[in-house]
Length: 215
Length: 372
Ligand SMILES: Nc1ncnc2c1ncn2[C@@H]1O[C@H](COP(=O)(O)OP(=O)(O)OP(=O)(O)O)[C@@H](O)[C@H]1O
Ligand SMILES: [Mg+2]
Image 1 (cartoon, each protein chain N blue to C red):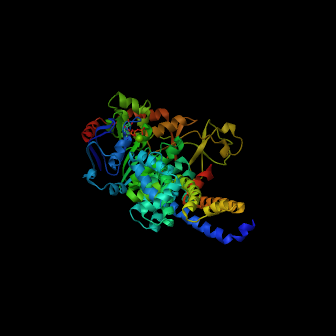
Image 2 (cartoon, rainbow over the protein chains, first blue to last red; image 1 turned 180 degrees about the vertical axis):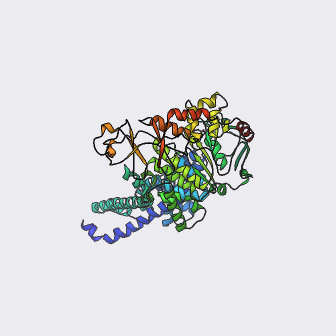
Image 3 (spheres, chains in turn purple, cyan; image 1 turned 90 degrees about the vertical axis):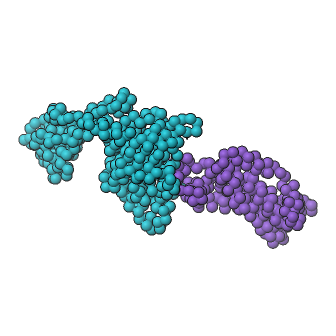
């Protein structure tokens, strides 16, 4: 515990970095997954293709992806962008299916009603389909958030610092307290992301709780 | 006016849902499409606002080919009440009602005012406005569905079994609200149902479809009940059609007998006879009592309320039913204000029925031509 007391500053700096490296890809990944998921719903032949492709992406070991990034992007080896892009790819891989399934969960009668009222295109998407898909998408987002927080720690191995550093450093120098602090910090971060998404979902879907209130 | 001209819909899997349909839904009237499940009612309805495109044939709205209109614009000008209400689960009741006005670019305040006004028109309490659809009963949801379709005051309304998901009592209320609204608004309405009673109650014109999407018969309800063209239609309109057709025969001047009445709270002392009618201060009938069974004042617990009440200006069916349902066998008849004007007996109504003609034959030709 003494170690932790002496290193609060370091832990916070690493945590801040961790939040960025896990959180930014979550946002970017969602933004990219939305049109892809929509396309997968729209053209039914695209669905299996996109689902298999994204499943495949997710099986690439994170270390391999981190190492490959500079080659593909032409970035410097220590550039944080490598991690952000790699994590975004993982997030997209997880969320395409979620978005597609979320849009698929919108009741057919509601869609028909929207068409009958004269809803078209983007307005229908943002006004009716997307809001109703929020519960499913948020559930997927929570999984992606937790997964991101855990995968990002691997980035220590390519020299991008975040909470994973506590694990590698603690391991190298036999400081158990440092390792424990790293694990606890990761768990706290994951819980924080989870809580934030849950809160956002609550605010965006007041009707879901109304449903529960009646039962 | 909505006109179907030789309209056929064949789905990609080969199902012919609508087969060479020609009919006209006149402006300001209710045209009901009725028929067994799967006979193509929904398909026909959805071809009007082009949610489904016809395979062949032409549909026109006030003489304009709908196939050439902008889809979204066409739809915003046509109110649509979807089967099972189809409300937006994520929007409150007022926001559901305001959907089309918002799409048409009305401002928020204007939309809100209009929505509240409509909720009132369809008989929904103002405090329901901020609820979500899942917090409403089936009947309330259907009212919201109707209000939503009316919101932008479209001249045309398409209604797909709007009252089917509720119990018979609520359905009856909704139908009455709907007829009231229509008598004020005079929309051009195409109404789909599989319930022949609903068709007959609501339709100015009823089109019976058979499975395979063929038009079997189109005419006004009275004529349909009196002259079904074939066994299918006869079977479909049902067994009680003789009795039900009386609904369309306005009662001629009924031979009324004046009735000895008692006021609520009056004593039965000195009153003889089997059944006596009790009325309120405005002479509106409340129910029957048997004087022999009441000692002292008549209270509302003593009243027998089984009998229906007929309006003097109503139909022969109403008059006959009042007589048949009355414990005294004397049917209570009131004027338009609800005040008692007298009673009538079943045999008197029956002789009136015998003296009236059935709906006249000539109209068969008129509709045959329109349908062609
Ligand atoms: N998208 C579709 N593809 C293929 N067949 C369809 C499609 N939609 C409807 N059908 C078929 O077309 C026929 C008419 O369907 P429609 O929904 O118009 O019937 P309906 O009269 O409204 O029935 P219900 O009273 O059950 O609502 C049915 O046989 C139905 O199975
Ligand atoms: Mg139908």
